[in-house]
Image (cartoon, rainbow, N blue to C red; front, side):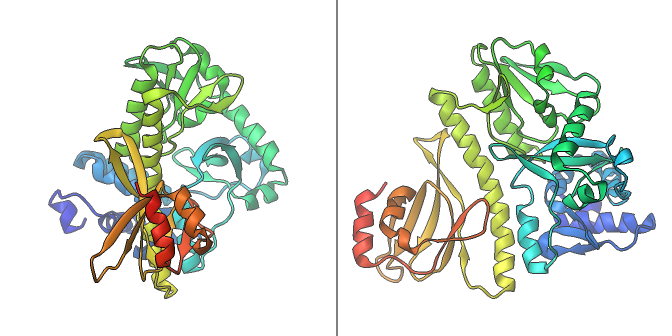
Length: 397
């Protein structure tokens, strides 16, 4: 182990990578290497991103880290997916994943010229995708479209079979968390993905229509539309999970009734949900920023990758606004935010203003250039003229 982990200090991502590679070598698992540029370990086309597992590892107590290390080593020993549909069809399950969970890998693949194989999946609802996972027993890998071709079946056929497998798992149980909120427990895992199975909610003790959030992998919280204070408590649980747990997934609230629909509550709960969603996307933008900075540096594109910042209104954590900064003389990649902060005359009196994105787009949108990034970023290579700045100042927040 590294000197930091030996002393009991919080391990860095590099510490985790080095400890994992040393343990792998002792087991005779060769070919794995640490790619510090994109925070991953690689073996040919196999890639394990260190970001989320590091959050899990660093937060665990020292005895728990030994157990986690064994889990991660199993990830390095994943056998190949069967090329026979007759065998593979019994081991596939429909996973719910964020469409943003490969943001950094996709950016890194541009820099490293390692194209990511398309995963077998489709848009589910909101920012969620429904993708195929192959259960190896100790771990799950995502099925690629190339595997579907080898199996000789369509995506729709594979997902239909995967849903049959998910419905066939042992029955999940609801555990009360208090304040009208319940959490589902599944003996076989796939907890967050059980949202796809309507009968799971037949036994939910909550009053009214089920309202559900899956803020983290392995987490499914629910309340009922008629539970007093239930939505408020559900949002509080989801916020804590998104901020503290290691595998953030989704910040949307869903209504389960003749299918799954996005649901927006009213009043203070609506503000709380919007703030949770801003917190969630801020972590995605932060990861995207790190990857983009490395990418732009590698291709010698001297551009500022702007931060997705958050402002609190009236000192209320449930009233957040997002912002990004655009400075005179600086080319930038702006995240899509509620407000844009303009800064100019930097060597003189230095002027700063905040303007709503919509107003800024109406006045200086001709400078905006779309990019391929998701979540979206807008490229700006020129700064507004004095006349345009004067017009922007009429819309200052």
